[in-house]
Amino acid sequence: MKRQNQSSVFDFILLGFSNFPELQRQLFWVFLVDYLVTLLGNAIIIAVISLEQSFHVPMYLFLLNLSLVEVGFSAVIMPEMLVVLSSEKTTITFAGCFSQMYFILLFGGTECFLLGAMAYDRFAAICHPLSYPVTMNKRVFLNLVMFSWVSGITVATVQTSWVFSFPFCGNNEINHLFCETPPVLELACADTFLFEIYAFTGTILIVMVPFVLILLSYIRILFAILKMPSTTGRQKAFSTCASHLTSVTLFYGTASMTYLQPKSGYAPETKKLMSLAYTLLTPLLNPLIYSLRNSEMKKVLLKVWRRKVDLHTF
Image (cartoon, rainbow, N blue to C red; front, side):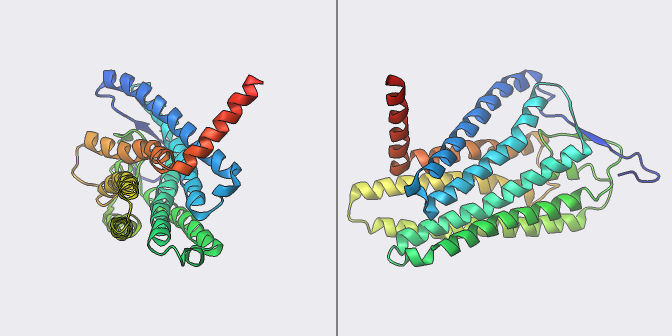
């Protein structure tokens, strides 16, 4: 984007944790393992739900979409992050930075709405079991999934296009691990006040509103759990809800802290850690929380494993 009287930026340099070279080397192996486990865990969920006919119901199909989002999220961020951690400075092209930011926002926005839809699904199933087949019929399910993906695409298109419409001149060093909106925006040599108002409003609508709805859904679910006659059932349901809420709070909490104030006064290293919480941990934790704590999913996984063992035996 060449502009007169300004030295235009045609590529960016991702600094990562270049001030801590020893830490970078150690983090490389940690993040590589995290990436591989995330891909494997989510790929297993996608395969099991796709192949198992009994799992073709809203609860598991929502989970399948969440796993697709997590795979996309990790694939967009982690390879570039590993390159950054394996060198002192990594150059990324203007188009590459645009693409990475676009898909981060697409998958992040989709996940915000998808987690809200999943909480509503559980609320309808637990609190209103008799009307659940009508409340969450095929049409409602498809509308919720389509709304989540279309919303993610819309958010990504508007926000990325706006950020990269600003002129970038002079310094091209992004003090971050990947092309995320706040650190890129700091390099813009123009007034970004209107964008910051949009970012604040957008974060309230896209992050905070679904988060509040999820909390309200789980409060109703917890009240329903407390009415259960079985103590064991109550403990199991409460444990599952607590795990879901932990993952949801981690994702929405760190995402809102990052995007509510794009030019906030947090130290660069603090911003990096907050970004890692929702880009690194939640894609890893979600397969564990939403599937391995699910008895039906574990039964199917064991059944598939036994089949594999039997085939090798014979």
